[in-house]
Amino acid sequence: MAGTECAWDFVADDSSLLPFLHRIKKTDGTIPHFQLVLGSNNINGSSGKSSILAWRVMN
Picture (cartoon, rainbow, N blue to C red):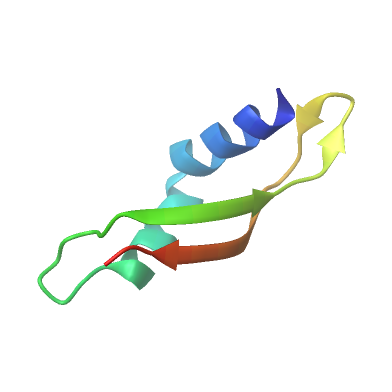
């Protein structure tokens, strides 16, 4: 459950998601398919602050 919460918190928080999307944006302005590995601290079954551990862009 904490993993799902971590993913949702990342996607729902513009201050986390938008800088990442800007970083991977193509020169034509499109966003490519990508994969993320997020990490978070599990505190009593709830997700703490998430961070990007790894990512890759699909070409």
